[in-house]
Image 1 (spheres, rainbow over the protein chains, first blue to last red):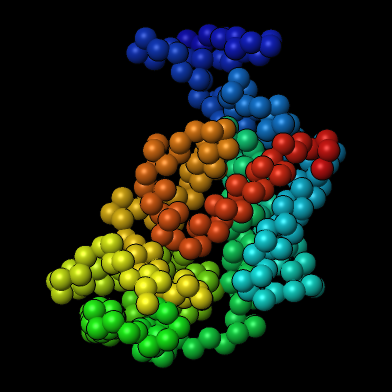
Image 2 (cartoon, chains in turn green, blue; image 1 turned 120 degrees about the vertical axis):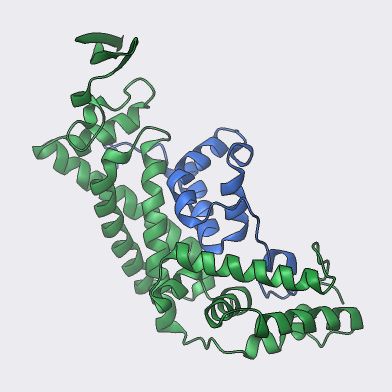
Length: 249
Length: 81
């Protein structure tokens, strides 16, 4: 049997009684076709307006989409500018990345708005998609500017990279010799490629994601496993964290 | 990571067992950011996400971007794009 429960502001929901507890009636739970039931009590006014606009039809919906696109574009432009220094992307390319990221983020938001549960402001929830798309697009642009070589050269120079000059202390030389040996012998070919690219060559993870055709999660798992192997190898050789070699001379 | 100051080997080899990974972190990143912006301690409530954001350069960039965007633009509403 259904009951109506008023939650304030003249808003009420139909509920079912199950096991002595009231639960939102099935047809009114948040979902693709009934987002209007999304927790109106906890949602801030702006978030409620965004969700209502996305769920509306006709002109109200179209105006919301235009407004959301304009807002996301502002955020995307700010984000690509924030990241541009490290990736050497300039001018028109920045605008291309921002536009493409906005279009794809808006598409994702429209398809996933039913997943929004009011756990944050709507805008914060939406920005995840903007950031992800900016990362993806900038990873793609990275290879246009730089054909990085994922070879072994960088880790051969590992001791030099510590201070910008050949390592002076024998202890450090021994540590890096062991680390170099572990990179060479204990990692799989893919782990070595990912670790050298990200940890030593500073290739953005999302650029590597594109290069290897894998997901970000898969690349990170590969990096994580490589790190764990190297830590185990170093531990077996008597080196344990903190390694205390950063910036040493 | 190989900056002028040299390598930070501890960061380079960071691999915390509680690390959630990228996908699980992404799922609650908006909550994490929002909790931080209201003065909460999301790292205490979500240690796996905190560990991940320390170790994953890509997700850390997304997190930093979200913090900045939410502070600067987060109060926007449809009527005032």
